[in-house]
Image 1 (cartoon, one colour):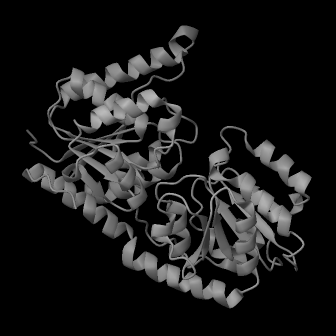
Image 2 (cartoon, rainbow, N blue to C red; image 1 turned 90 degrees about the horizontal axis):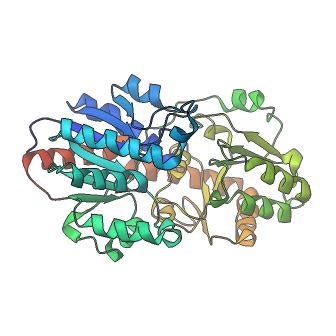
Length: 390
């Protein structure tokens, strides 16, 4: 029985990432429409946590895993997992009528196990934010997720590509829903001032990649592509790479850039939690990921009026209209990526026309207002007893 507008979100961490930022963006609207929002985090708090951002938005935040203990045995993963599960179980017993919404696989599995143990009867939702490649590496997770899909009331995808995989996993159509990501237009900036700030005022071509430094984000493919075409990008160029380097992968990438002879062309910005104000100084944005659900970076670039070159993974081609608002290239093919970069680098008018069309497409389909309206509609239908998902 749901007696009030209370939402319990379970998420793996509050480090800066796509899922975390998406949840942060929709939180203010939920609260403004009368919902109480509680964020339960399965991992311990990290240095780059978005905790204060959520609290400033009006949400309460609880970390289910205690901070690092002086006792070594307490810091072991199984102990911390058990502590987090116990805390979540107790929360479900204490708040049995809250709507529970799980983000990311670990949160989903823990949420469903605890719900069963707590005999939790209120609605449970799950948001799949990426392709299910992780299931190939962890077959037990694949089996558990298929089992829990039968218990979840609503399972949401953020792209048609993710939705297709969920259908293949056996999720019933009446439990499936699709809500695309949405963002606000980035704040207006002075491109000349930004370029001067990063000593790019005399650079005729600025490429930008926004992604945390991790192998699956395809930085190495992009560097390989640029190494192949460095002599064709005449007149000087720079690649601005923005993203946290939590796993120290940056050293590997910097060595690769040195081997390719493009070190002086790359600027690494690894401590910027929000890059939305920087897109305005880019001539094009590049997404070379090996897997995506639905990229916030693409939307941020589109809203800023920039063309995007993106790999054909996940929902990228649902956001980008190939040859109109950007270019779609095959994944794991640096040669195709290189060709696309050269093509746009030599066609300023085409880049600008694509950017204008991209911004119009964002305005028509991917605003934050449209996204949050769909969440509000879904939650309200759940409260009123309707189980239809648009």
